[in-house]
Image (tube, rainbow, N blue to C red; front, side, top):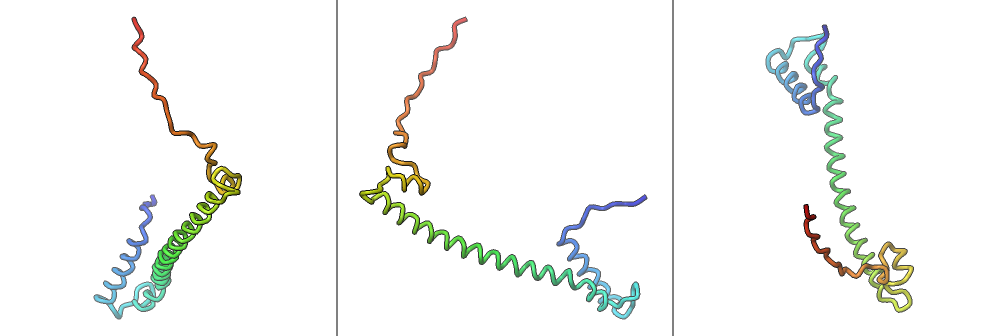
Length: 127
């Protein structure tokens, strides 16, 4: 009968690797297990640590690039507002023109007035 365990998280695996290496180095530093010294074992699992370091670098870079994108987007939206406001103020275009609509805005003549009439509650039905 095979016993299945839940897959371990990357943090748990890293902790396990460090615990095994640390315990081995502390208590039996010269003893071989499975034909390996502790240093050979540590070298064999080094890719796990190297990939973790790469992920940290990539996460840092992603955070930096995301911030740069957000800053650039804020500047770009300011430029959009300048252009749209210029189109709205242009005597040949204006906020009722087709260019304004083509830029993704609703023409002034197509906007709802905002005035709403509230419905009166109907009296309850007589029994």
